[in-house]
Image 1 (spheres, rainbow, N blue to C red):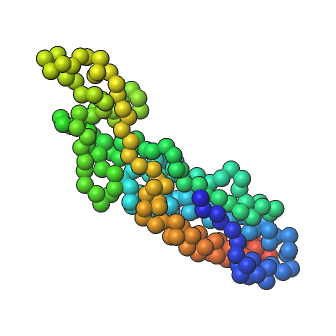
Image 2 (cartoon, rainbow, N blue to C red):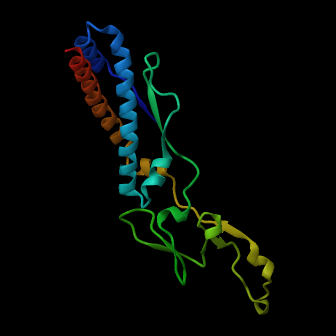
Image 3 (cartoon, rainbow, N blue to C red):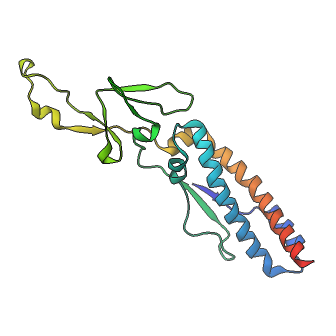
Length: 194
């Protein structure tokens, strides 16, 4: 969870620039916070894609902005990074091979193979593996062992976010972007004034 709030120095700069229009200060601050949140969602999704081998839609779906956006009375926006559930192996470019299913979780990592696994297209292309491999009758097995399946999952976006220490990066990026957005809002009001 990343909170986007205004620091005192940025607020003082905004008040100095807009001292003759005090009603615009809170409105423009809320706009700057919301623009920062929207832009950081895209930046965070891009940064996650640098570490995890997932597509852009999956990365953006795992990061969301809280429904309560910043307003003049509530100057805070929150960005949530999905902690649960684990992403299925199908999100990590899983491919069916003769030996099983190959996948690659991290962008710099190596491909791994799940022996005896298979992809079922009917169930959102999820990857399954039999809990108990088939044993022939000669070896004392029966076909009922064969029916139990387990869903194969990878990792969550939040785990990758923590593992690669992206929370500090997020705080730094949000602070810089918020300062920039406030400067843009001040420019906008001053140009409108002239």
